[in-house]
Amino acid sequence: MPRQAPPPVCPVDALLRLLMGSWTSYILWHLRRDGPMRFGALLRAVPGLSAKVLTQRLRLLEERGIVFRDHVPSIPPAVSYGLTEQGQELGGVFDALEAVSSRWLARARGANEQAQAPPTARRKQANARAARTP
Figure 1 (cartoon, helix red, strand yellow):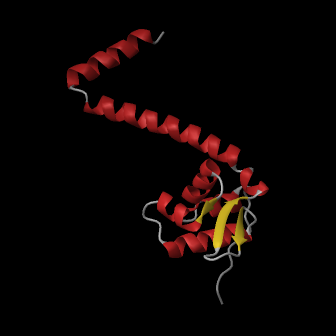
Figure 2 (cartoon, one colour):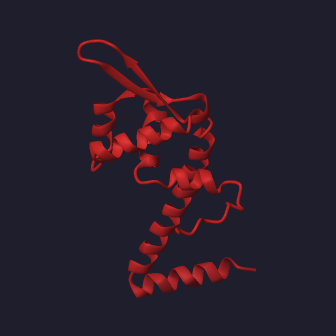
């Protein structure tokens, strides 16, 4: 008998697990930034994403009420995907994550630049920091 996972204790656990699914953040980011998109346009917008995985992710997001699927019966059929009202609520989450990510990337770049600086430059930087510290 398979072991059942314990119920989530953290109130954001289910949402984070959904967002951490492969390619999910890319898909949601593009739909938020670009608005409703057709399947092929979304597939081209995310290099490396396969049609199979995109289909799986879109179905899951649609089941969860985050993405809508708009089907226009025409020849050829026109299907587009966009964010539902619930999906649009994630906008603030993505803004906050982008802000934190940008800060962390800037710090990492600064640390890399400092590590690659010649030893004399690193000593000068350390001395300048020490002089500023009360």
